[in-house]
Image 1 (cartoon, rainbow, N blue to C red):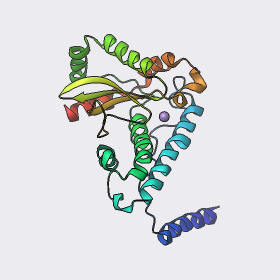
Image 2 (cartoon, rainbow, N blue to C red):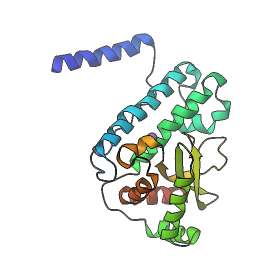
Image 3 (cartoon, rainbow, N blue to C red):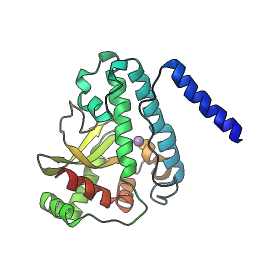
Image 4 (cartoon, rainbow, N blue to C red):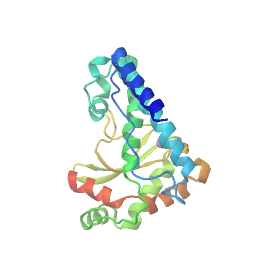
Length: 227
Ligand code: MN
């Protein structure tokens, strides 16, 4: 078994060397197991979402960049903020798959089985921006319900203030042509692939469950870093 694995790995390395292809973007390791978020997110959804959907975005992004090697030293955020200047033949692929890679990498890091709560500083900002924690949650849930089809809901810092925005498909507030740009501190995937196996068409129940697994420590850290 050991020998077979070693052979496969060496073969992969060799293939990369001879093809001259640099595997640029990689699927980041999940910091918890597929069943860690049960009952709020089921393990089958986590497995398919992470190892199929997210992996496909990464592979397709790399395939697009392979067609324009001059872009190979750019970071993901740089690709997305400069999306309007990406060569036309790969612009949509970079938008959808680069956005997909960015959004999912961000989303996984915001989930946790641990009980967490916002820092005092973040809570103050939420209360001052939205009236109360409950009205903030209600506004976020409303934005999630209002996103027709596939997309994302975000909490961003824009001009020093917290704002809830939503984006279609794999767009995000980092993209150069986003109608509402800002620094993301929280996000929720509202694509059906994120909840359909467990919640079917009940997106509202999935959004409510999100509050039980949201990593407020991470959101607080992001807010502290950018505010
Ligand atoms: Mn997704």
